[in-house]
Amino acid sequence: MHDPTTRQLARRLLGSGLTLAEVHRQTGVPLSTLGYWRKNPDTGAGSGRSLCPRCHGRELNGRRYSYLLGLYLGDGHIAKTHREGVYRLEIACADSWPGLIDEAAEAVAEVMPGHKVGRRKVTGCTNVGVYSKHLPCLFPQHGPGRKHDRKIELAGWQRKIVDECTEEFVRGLIHSDGCRVINRIRRPSESGDRWYEYPRYNFSNASLDIQRLFTDALDRLGIAWTQMNRRNLSVAKREAVARLDEFVGAKY
Image 1 (cartoon, helix red, strand yellow):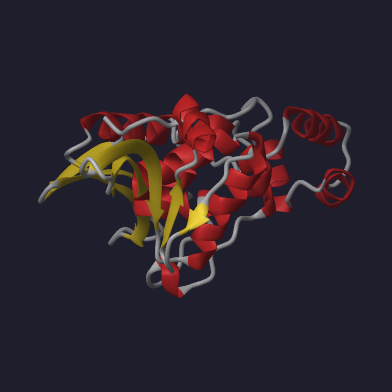
Image 2 (cartoon, rainbow, N blue to C red):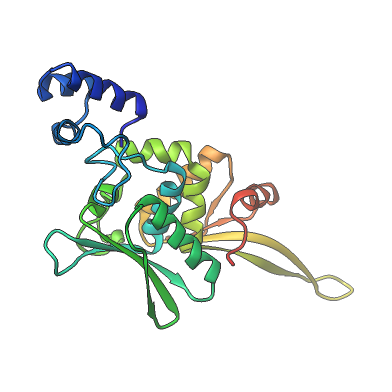
């Protein structure tokens, strides 16, 4: 993804007659992108179905992408289809949370405008999906095998988006692999047992890399967290829960 200033500069330099290599040296825009812009000078930011934010410089909604990235890292996968060069992204959403299914579909539609967003029913779950040749461009974490069996790290352009839209990223991670629950604790006393209740957030993921992305994001937001065991984390302090409640809240 390229910011508007970089795109405008590159298009102006292309229009001046400079070679692709010269414009690349001055702007850092990939040669393939510059070649596309030269062939399609009237494309603008690019909102067509076939245009990719990484390959063609189409505008990308950072807030919705950050949320969708969180969903993908938690409960999403990308697979090749029988059509050459075409991939399918699917986000698994439990049927217990119909609002989450709708929001996942909205996020996919905003990140992939012009593409048909489908919903595939399986037992107890709805997979929200979309087809595109450019899904690996948008989600470079894609690879063979399960996420916790391979290295997961963000590309530089992804880190910039997540840093700017950290709340949406955390929200996506919790909506996929987390929950807000009421914890009950029994305290014995002379007059009998007394029960105390308080809300907390839990997050569970087998990938230590994804856990680190989650906790790094919480640290940037100043939200205290605790490692419960190898794959489970908790946010239980009153002020930390209240902070998450501002932008996450319970699933619905």
